[in-house]
Image 1: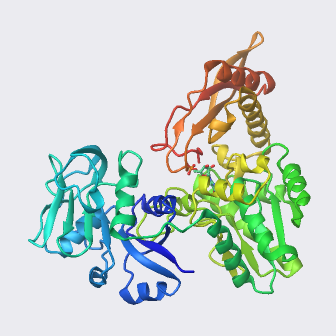
Image 2: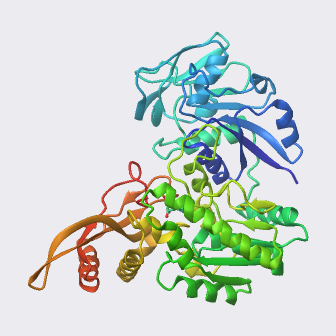
Length: 514
Ligand code: XMP
């Protein structure tokens, strides 16, 4: 049975995948496609789904920029409903020969809109609504075949629709939680305007991933990089379901793993009948990182060394494919899209060397957010100690040691991490938190231990709450718990004289320090 689907045209906006995800939350299938998709390509997609609507995402552009991405205007004539958000809204107005003025500065934050006509996408909304806006250009006028549905003090055309065709534009972001009735607006578009049926289930993701993996690998063999974090664990279970004995999970111990990690991974996966090997490669990683202090260089070195280790292991068993647990935020932050910016190179994405000896790399979780991965894990019946695991970056503790990585620093940060983890889990806060860990900073400071002066390392404790890691807040942990962590670290690690708590949200900081 073909599913009803909404396509999200990607103009490089930060929230592009969030739109797709919100649609899936309404149990309607959604896929992200390039912004310049043609009617012919949409026709091709229609062979495997019923394309019922198009959403033009936001993007960091002004319609007047020379290289600003555009869409194929023929898509407006396909009689498929179209909804433009932010940049998408301005672009539709621009194409329609409306008056779009470049802003002198970007307006950013909560805005109060007045809904003049509560119809279509705005059906059932109150006259006043709170929405999240972030835009440079503003639409000031539209031709007579369009009508204005909402405005704000500074934005005379904050929402519009075409009088005859199902074409809508919203200057704000309904996909962001700060837009109070954002879900209602999207549901209006999906069900009232596009007339979609809610027949998509998260289980379909599992079937899709298994089917896709079997299709690509055929009768061949594949390896998968298993780090023990939730993403690669779920990808491993999925791949094992697809390929059975033809899958080998490889856990590379690059020396920057958490305490007891290798043993945990080996035990858990063997128990569930997955082929798994542990490759101990600490020395070769440490050697390559010798003298390296730049975080991006560290990530790239670790990424490329990983691939070399995988290639060697794959050759031994004759595997031609590599499966990875990359998820959507890893890709977006690595700047994989044509129109977005690199924030940091996640080692399993941008850190890959240009030349690799695999026929293909398969990323079954590539479009999902972390909480969707957890949902898949639950549906698949994965053991709870895996479902509840904290995310752990591929480059491991190496990106939690600021500056040069050495054996001594790795040992210190691993022990400090164990203390943070133990104390948070004992305190009962663990389940509410996204991540809790220690960072070894480059700052040394004076302390007093016993009766003498000490000069030692500063450990930073990072504890955050988040829903999908795109944004995060530092957790307001009780002082007593922080005190126990601090006391234990300075008592048990004589090289550390100071412990600080990181009180920065994401943005502006990222969760990991490097
Ligand atoms: P940042 O530091 O970018 O992290 O705010 C967002 C989430 O991603 C995890 N992370 C990684 N995961 N490979 C991964 O598989 C990586 O290279 C990587 N870097 C960061 C991080 O722990 C957080 O949960």
